[in-house]
Amino acid sequence: MEEAFASALLVSLSVALLAAVTAALGVSWYFSRRVQRSISPVTAAASQVAAGRYDARVPDPGLGGEFASLTRTFNALAERLGAVETTRRKMLADLAHEMRTPLATIDAHLEAVEDGVRELDETTLGVLRASTRRLRRLAEDVSAISHAEEGRLDIDPQPVDPASLVEGAAGAARGRYASKGVRLETSIHTHDPVLADTDRIGQVLTNLLDNALRHTPPEGTVTLTCSRIDRWVQYTVADTGAGIAGEHLGRLFDRFYRVDTARDRNHGGSGIGLSIAKALVEAHGGSISVDSSGVDRGATFTVRLPVANT
Image 1 (cartoon, rainbow, N blue to C red):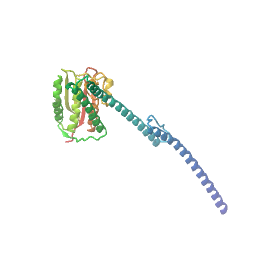
Image 2 (cartoon, one colour):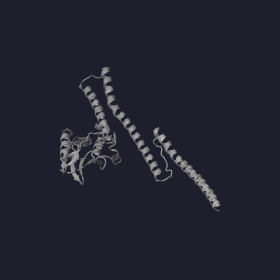
Image 3 (cartoon, rainbow, N blue to C red):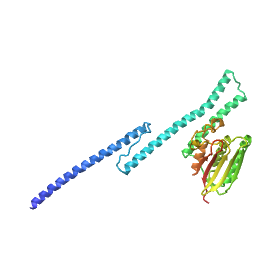
Image 4 (tube, rainbow, N blue to C red):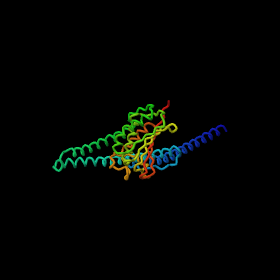
């Protein structure tokens, strides 16, 4: 009986082990095939993205939360890369367009001088200098926005009296405002220190004041206000100028973006000033926004910077 029991036990264990190994191999084969079928679309989509086809997407394989998270992350990455590529192409096209006008002006005047149609007098030199200044300003603006968006700006935020920033920006702009006949008013409601780099935020406020001046007619008014809102120091630049239609408000801080009816090239801007302002403010941990009731109803730009901990 003992021999029969031992023999039966050995046979049972052998059969059970064989069945377990067979089942394990079968299950492993099934899951490996399923995982392989799930990974294959990711590999194919990655190859498409590497080839520049950023519309490639991966469906959820239904293998659990980890795989679902992987597909969502991959799809978000592909979408982001597509947006970056679209922005890059648009920026290059816009940059080429911006450069074409001053270069065409320089070429036309030089050709006229060579043909004897025009003389190289002060008027011609003035046109050439204006075109080269526009190219230089464009190059400086592109460099500034690139450094700002890459986080390579030299920013040193320090506790600063917000009134000094208002007075500095307004004082530098008063001559330009007076020459155009536009009133520049200031209103200061707080002296709580703001955490800011004086030069960089001064550049932001100067950009906003210059932008308001370009789009405000003579006898109009631009008001620069400073106040305390919760944990923020808020600056507003409000003008009584051309205003902005509602459909343009969301894109006004895009590089090279202009509103056809009011923010066009005839006003002399490069189309990057507001983008630079946005990058600089966000580098300080603040925010910038714009609001307008519509065309010919003025516009208000709002900058919020954190209050310094004292």
